[in-house]
Length: 124
Figure 1 (spheres, rainbow, N blue to C red):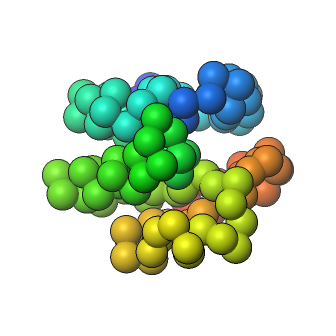
Figure 2 (cartoon, one colour):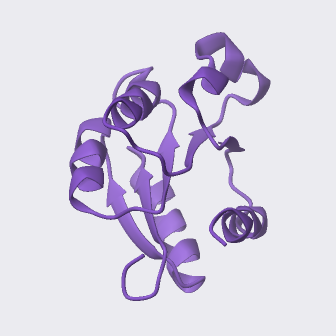
């Protein structure tokens, strides 16, 4: 938490998605940090006290999202991590997300009401 607000790190290589998440989350009272690559996301995470992470599955590389999660977990990250995916049920064909210790998978396009309800419950 920073200044009484939960801090959420959003990592996605799509600027439109980052702007959407930032707008929705800031309007709901969250502090938002962003990164456009997994590498930058790790750097931001290392310097900020994040309460939750939202990361896209496919960024600059097909498995960039899973590599990002593995790196955070290897560094001892215990915060909830949600993966964004537009793949739906085909996600299991690409990665075993349960083995990554994810808090969940969020389907694109995001429903802002469902997202905020989920985060509110998770960050209580």
